[in-house]
Length: 245
Length: 332
Ligand SMILES: Nc1ncnc2c1ncn2[C@@H]1O[C@H](COP(=O)(O)OP(=O)(O)OP(=O)(O)O)[C@@H](O)[C@H]1O
Ligand SMILES: [Mg+2]
Image (cartoon, rainbow over all chains, first blue to last red; front, top):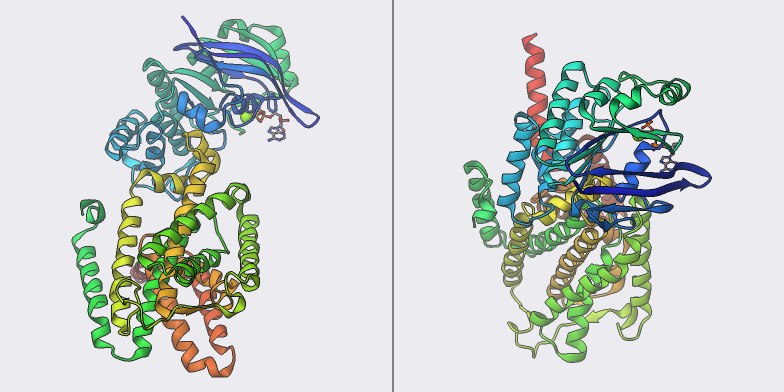
């Protein structure tokens, strides 16, 4: 299998604050990799560097064999990196359908083609019934789903999911896990930030553990949960369950 | 045709046809100079409002300095006539291109600013432009430009005695602009602009080059406002920077779009009808009380902003809401 994403010694500083320090790991094609770590560990910052929202202070990012370290966010989206936001960034004054079509227009200017894509994606995400609703009227779970739908409409090869399950009920979480599996079975590699350990265990092929900006370990879910360092980092860093966001 | 009327229901099409028919016969019904003048101003201000709306409404970047493009449009017909005897048929599109180029050049730096900073910056730029035009010899300074010339061919130089000809010509141009906006509103370009207005991070995450699309919107917006300025100059056959390039004009352009319904296709036209009627009638009835017209005007704007933040276009749905609330109240 070839690597779709390679991070090489990524460091990101905000002034004196080091949010990511020397983080290196990679994601294989078609793989689901979980990213865990206590609050403020630098998970979202890492996603921002990968998706081009931030420029890393140092280190390199390679996507599909191409150096994308300095690529701006919109170019990253064009070459196949889709992302969701931890705090949903829905376009509240637009309908669900419109939110998704702006994603679908990423690779075409033809409205008919884009509309076709929207239907596909809305069905995939089970959001057809909301298509004419204003995104601002959706609840958190639906907004998180819309984030995924919008990103999926851009036809990503790699999907970055930032806590798409936080604040969801058990049933909603189960639906979301199913959706992640469905998306993955379409050949999309997924990097997902998740606090709920059950979810991480059940979806991830491998898990990356970040603590205070540094990579603590990469391994299979079993390896990660049985690692004493991980356990102490979680307890020391303040464990987090799905109820707080 | 389908792109223009495709998404309208029968009722809306009929309403549109009736309004259009009224617009066509209006100057035949109203023979007074006052009303005919008003009709022409409405058409011109509709174009200005639609132009501003591309940038301020759809793209969400509020410019308080669009009077500079209004002036630019006027100068491009006025000065090319004065120096080169150029026909407005060429000068108008030339002015639109010039405005777009100008918007591109200054858009690069100023579009990095957001919200209020952008609004204030555009305001300052428009003021600078006015000072420049007032002080340059090339632009005839504060004296302005006089375009009237009896010996010119009236069709080639768009100088007519009968104001109805201006009206019909401008109405056709306005309808073309309207059709353009209507078509674009269902295209990638405008969807992207609305996405940028909604959330720039989200826009970038779906592959939208935010600064590129902002510049494009600004260019189109400038070109349309320049068109409006050219038409105004062509109609008045005289203009000066002190009447065209003021903050007052910039704010009126904003108001037309905001009052009618920001970011909507028909909002600016409705806004132009209301604002122009208001300002012309208040000026003629209350103007002699020194500024009373502006007071009334201000009060109206405050009322609309407070109670109808979506503009007058949202009035029917607001009334419906209010009625249904009242009905359910009675049912209880
Ligand atoms: N734009 C920014 N400017 C300054 N500091 C930032 C910025 N973004 C993040 N940080 C800081 O970087 C550190 C890592 O934040 P980040 O959001 O990446 O953590 P996280 O692992 O996603 O946490 P959480 O689980 O709470 O989402 C934090 O200390 C945060 O305050
Ligand atoms: Mg985070």
